[in-house]
Length: 96
Image 1 (tube, rainbow, N blue to C red):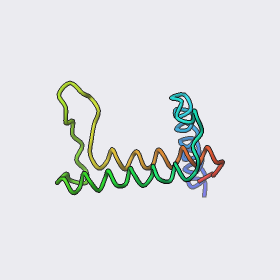
Image 2: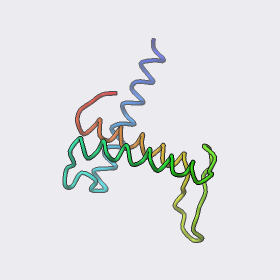
Image 3: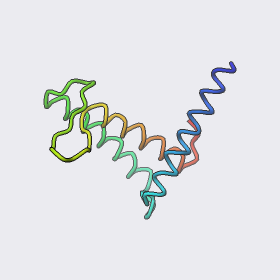
């Protein structure tokens, strides 16, 4: 039970941190509706599927442009889904 509690606290802190970063980056300026956010969850999932359709392995991270350090791949898109969900939950005061 103690380990479960510690995990929950860490997860909650992650949710708070992600939302603070999003606010600092002005993601919520202007505020977005829950519907807009849900569409963005779907968009990130669609991007992961597109990576798969393009022949990328589920665990592959790649850098498509020389001199550009922005990673691409299914893991990146799935991370974006998690980030968006945690950020949205914090905005709407949903404690996962």
